[in-house]
Each structure stands twice: as structure tokens, then as C-alpha cells.
Image (cartoon, rainbow, N blue to C red):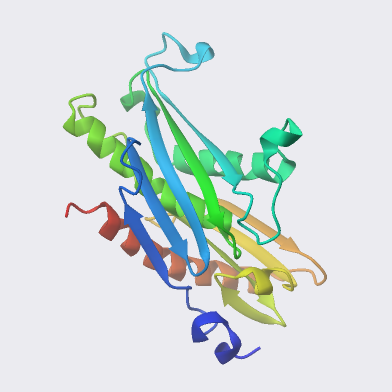
Length: 243
């Protein structure tokens, strides 16, 4: 595979075009529409002035996430989870990942006894939906925290840093950044890397489909991811900055 054969004429170390539209849902405390190439996800952060029963009276807040794909997001209609009466295993795994990732950059003791719900709804999927969800959810969360501060509900921002995520993998023996669906579906190795803006790793999910992943290739993929996440962080900061 040459760089010219990738979507958008990208080289191996290039992201798909990234766009983050802040304040996409005026009814949410914070929100963003993130597009990574053809993948599009609406991310909202909704603050509720209560915590789960098991946290009540501890003076700490909570943050949790939900993730779902709209029926037409993949072309062939995807059955809604509610019609099956339960979440599928993939959705459960991804929403737990989103929650863990965002809890890694928030001081819940500064949130007060309130809960922030992060909802990530995939409008269109072309690979990397979990990574786009984490990256967009951070923007929605940062905007929500800013709004709570401006309304006098928070004295200080509870955020301790930023977080973003990107996919990478080995395709035909070549390390590639930000896989679209066609690349992800044929990759020998695919990985999702969640990293703070300061370069700390929150989670690395890597799977070798046919060929074992060497330590050298893992290091190469992590370096690719770090460079991509630096670009994503710049897009996040631009989206969060006051107009």
C-alpha cells in the first residue's frame, strides 16, 4: 500500500481531515460534533445535580458515558439496542472505555455531588468511532465544565488535563495512522491509543489478527499515535477556545 492509495491521498502518518463543531446541541451542558473523515459522532455532556446512591454523602461527583450507533450509521441498518432489550457487548466495552478515559483527566472531588453524563452517538461510521468519541467527548466535557463555572456552580475547573484517542495499525506490513474501515478490516494489527495532552498513556488496545506484533512495531505505532494525538489536541483547543 502506498500513501497515495489511502483515503484523502494521505501518507502513512497522516490523520483524516478533522473537524470539531462545538456547541452543536444547545440543550446540552456541553456538546460537540466531531468528524474524522467520514466518521461523525455527536458528543454531549449533561450535568445532573445528584450522584449514584453508592456515592451519596461523600462530597464527590461522578462521570459516566454511554455510546451508541444510529441505525443508518453503517449503511446496512443496525438494529437499535432497545429493540433487542440489551446493549451489545461492543457498545458496553466502548462506553466503559470512554468513561475510563475521561475520568483519567478529571478531579471528581472538585465536581461536587453532581454527575456528568457523556453521550456519544455515532451518526456515520467509517472506522475509529471509539477514538472519535473520546476526542469529541473531551471537548463536550470541557465546555460543560466552563459553563458550570460561568453559572457559579463550580468554583474551579475539575479538569486536570486533556485526553484524545486515535487508531493505528499494521496494514500490509506498513504502520499506518488513523485507520478507516477498509484499512481496519484488513489490518494485521490494529490498535487504539488513548493519551493525555501531556503524553501519558491512559489505555492501549492492540490486537494482532494474523501476525504477532513485535516490540519494535508497537513502539513505532505508539510514536505514530503520539504525533496524531498532538494534532487532535490542537483541534480540541481550537474548538474549546472562546469565539
